[in-house]
Image (cartoon, rainbow over all chains, first blue to last red; front, side, top):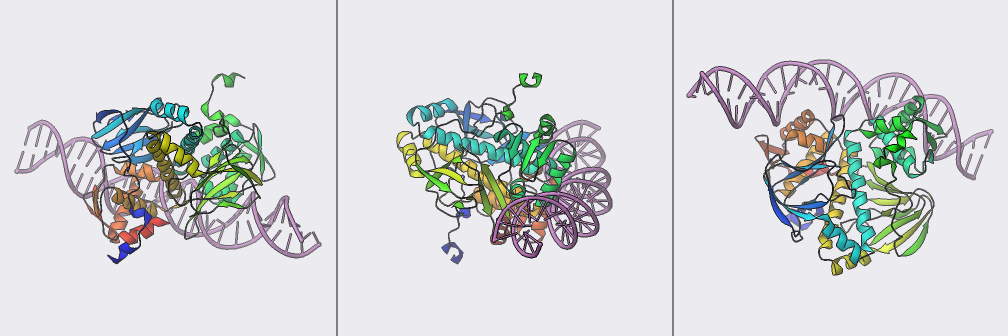
Length: 216
Length: 216
DNA sequence: CGTTTCATTGAGTGCGATCAAGCCGTGTGG
DNA sequence: CCACACGGCTTGATCGCACTCAATGAAACG
């Protein structure tokens, strides 16, 4: 019992929901059945009542990344974009509650103008983190660096951009070492995909080719 | 110009904010300065006006994972827990807006009881995804499997739990192959950390040791 | 011009992937 | 009841990508 004197955050199951169940229709799903598919519209949000659910993202070349496992109480299917980036499948026989996203979003926007952008920002960051899971889990070093450069160029201007961060920052973002980042940058430059002017400024030379590399 | 006939989602910079700026005090941060530290309280939320920001998580043994880079318009510092899991540093001289989280949370709870649990769920999933970034980017195969088992055991009961998913699912969740997952499970069992009864049911034998392995 | 810090490049190693058998629980038909 | 097949899991042997260690190069700064 002496160990329980120190209460440790992680020992508390963080996802068993302490909030009420969502209002909506109940539905039963058989084990192995799909709840929603990749590219489906994001008009519905779900809460798991019983069973277990897996969300997965499948790439064109067959690589798979499981986004999360969900257990009773979890709300899932929340996405910022209109199209689903992950599909959801029942691992066991499940009971779920289905709620229209519009019932949440509408209420959100109409009542609290302040809250709208905050929830939106949260959803975006979630989406961003989930994309990053795919990158960290299933992409090669070369693809990671390519994806990073494409993303950055897309944010900071069209064709030429300045890196505000060090190689160490990039490495720690992509789950690599600075040496590997440096090698991949050199490689991409040798292949004519990008052109670096100094170590912090670059220009995309083959945008489409890079995007294909990064896509995965 | 023919390439632009097909509009591709990724070409739209998804994070340059299309929403108004948050109400709050402006603050200037010099390049390299910390905006908030790991374990700080999550009482404030920020929006970046100009410059670039990096959020990082540092583990006890010095491993570092960059959670995200933020650019003008981005809202950051949103967290579910009371203590920050990531710190935020200015990469360049920055201008930020600081808003009290209570002003958002309070408004959220009082006006829309329905919206409260949904936003909370979104924040939790974000937190969960960010934890997973750390796992995918900076943990060894052994640590990944240990973390997975500890997490699952924490959710599905105290000492014994049933895995609802296959080895392939686990592998795709942890960014490994089924062979490596299997090897690590065997390894952890040989070392006396867990005991498997069949391939789907297990029991933690050294909870604290496993947690130390998984912690990173 | 020297010093410091950050980035690149090279050589060798090791962790996890790949390829390839076996193993085991389950279901099916003789 | 046993023979067989099938899918999921485990174990072994080998390979290769990214890491480590080490040296060099290139900016930034005093």
